[in-house]
Amino acid sequence: MTDSDTPKDGDFTHWVDEKTEALKFTLGEKFPVPPTELHSPSAHRETGQQKLEEVLLEHETPTAEFLEELKALEDAPPLSDEELARQALEAGGDDGDNQTPE
Figure 1 (spheres, one colour):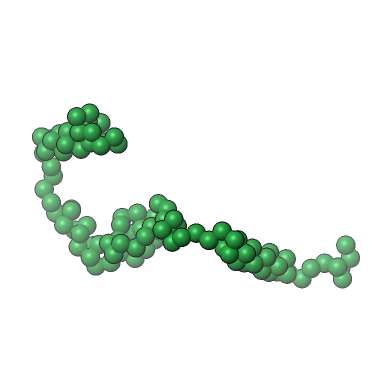
Figure 2 (cartoon, rainbow, N blue to C red):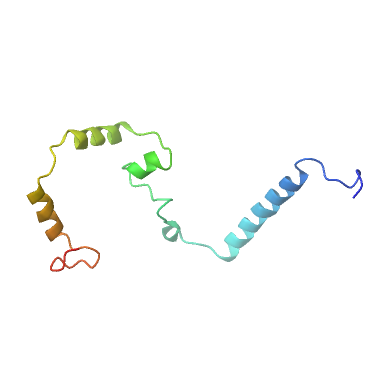
């Protein structure tokens, strides 16, 4: 390759970006995905309530409502061992059967 054939800085990146956007558009038309199927653990549906994962992992700024809820949890008295055991026995676990607690 001679100097005249060498691409300018950023030309290849620009070309790849253009092709990527064109491919996204083409695939989007061929394989439309209903909005209900776009849900994933990392890209959650907006529920109105901010979650701890969003603040810690996704670097969202905590809302006043979130900070109030966090403060209330911090100020709450700790649960007794009996209460924790009761809750564990009532929870059905992964299979939903409270007769076989996990």
